Length: 575
Image 1 (cartoon, rainbow, N blue to C red):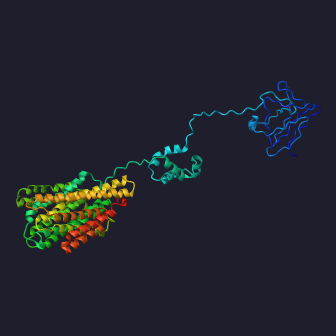
Image 2: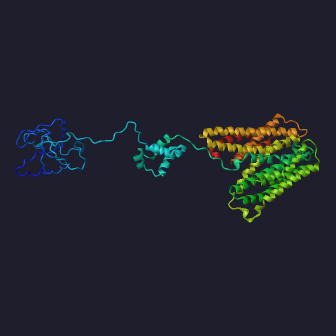
Image 3: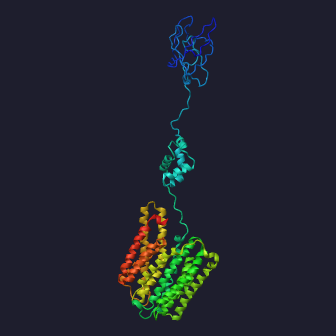
């Protein structure tokens, strides 16, 4: 090429060595170390002697390096020589030189001068030997999996791991360079597959009304059961002439006052519990203060209104019953079960009445003592409701408590029909057994709710939860019916002169108990409208057609069982 650098011409008298032009197209291999090509015999380029006898080659002027982008044209060989020219741009590995060093101007063998003594072949660079047993380099993905082991083991889906990686600042570019994965989702799937699932143990359930201890539940059950002793003390006072509708004397005002109290106090309790749920205890006390006295007056008025001539003692007892129901509602809603238990201690005097006859004044005195203690205690706990600030703001509407009152009416009418009989035990005895069973019923409601929450924490599929919740429901309902049967038999054995209950009467009572317990369960979970409607329809059917009583009660129990299985065995009902 015309622009290739040319060596400086030698001065006169000097014999310049023959320097071959570089050729980029081919680079012939270096001759063997033991072979030295012969130089042609010529005055200009004498034959090259053996390497051991060769004199030093005179220094030649420096030749500038040929640019890498240009190719030098082929040149004629030196006079008398036939050795191809060497590549001037040989790689550093071929020459043993490092990149960036100046070119080596030693003459090639047979290129017009003797070769410089030294090694005949360039030495290969030394690389450290890699032992065969050396451990492999650590995988960065293994290190990441070890660092995130606790979180990945508890994850339920790879997307949780991807969210953690992105929140940690890992970009897709960083993930591709470091871990060789396309993005955070691909990396998350690999981590999720590498780490074994180890879900943490469920935390202890928080304290709340559904997680009460056994002692508290037994205390409430005892408080529900002890008022039944009042019927034992008042039994001689309730016996009278044959009443209306084929019922024993005094049954109608007693049951009418009880049903009225259940309706009123159910709605009042719901309103007070709603205030407690909002964290406003003074407002709950104010609601009870303004609602309990009218409820007691309503129960008393209904009992007196339906009392016939000769049923005065029963009407008076019904009035005291209405006053006790109002006081007990106040104490139970505000969590004063122990105070109510103390007020019921005088009723323990009814135990000797099972075996011997007690004087009427003693019976009346024990009843009045218990009633007075309950009323005084209720008045004391309602004192915070007297303050002006206890009115509360933004509370629940009164109409929201109406369905709970309707459920109380329907369940009360079912109990009223169960109390219909020809003897005090077959009528009032069934009512006593149902009243005594309310304590165990509440405890079993707690057991079902607590068992469902436990299954919700431990089971992983909705199908497993439905199966477990259905089993728990059957066990709790069966336990309640067993307790109700035992209570009815106990009342029959302890009541002097009482006949054994017939099988149809026992079955009818168990159907009423089933409907009551399932209705209370639905009410506890907020599905009160359905429970109230079923109970009211069954009670209306029994009132219109008394002969269809067992069929109506059985239909109500079946409908409530279907509602319970549909609504309460789903995981979403317990969250």
